[in-house]
Length: 248
Image (cartoon, rainbow, N blue to C red; front, side, top):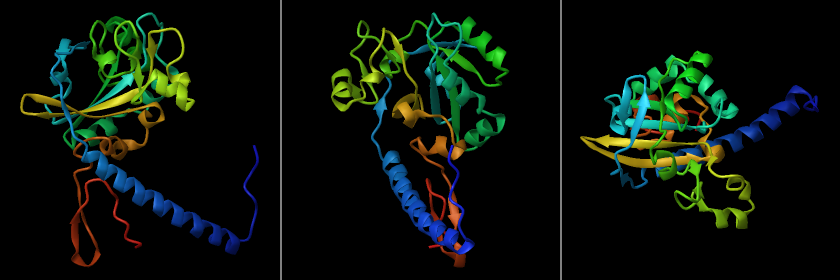
């Protein structure tokens, strides 16, 4: 692996300031993207999905744990696998009590869902010493309806909002190739209004990588970060997705 070039402090500062400008462009673009994400329309969830977890059979509304928002991590774990996906496992290793507490403070719950039968899921959870609930969607349409299990015999193949034909045309056919059913990563966000549940967002492929702390998770949701920042000189503004840039 090659190392960075060695330069003087003055040369480094020029390069760092140039990069800072690009970082600010990315931050502003990300803030606009987060705003657009919160403005997405939503779809009513009318199917009665049943999962199995530590308390036995539960429904999608139960996964909210009394909160208004739910983020589901789609964990790749097929029924015939002996262990969960290594990448999904690495992401789940980072789900800490602190992360869950920060999400809960923003009226948001996080649930991990895999397709393997619950005894396999619970045994794997225990082997990793995870302290979050891990639910099984085995026997339900949940994984197929949210396009993280791909099986043409159950539903038309779609992943990351592209059909199999669109993936092949775009050069991303690897997402849909292989022996079906195919397990794929992602996460989906839901909003509960009274007794009604709405699907607000899903992200897949690299967009569904569950890393980056509570703000990253909240930025995927309909309500965002739900914060107010107090700017210098007493100018207040509500910012639900962005960290204030006081350097501007």
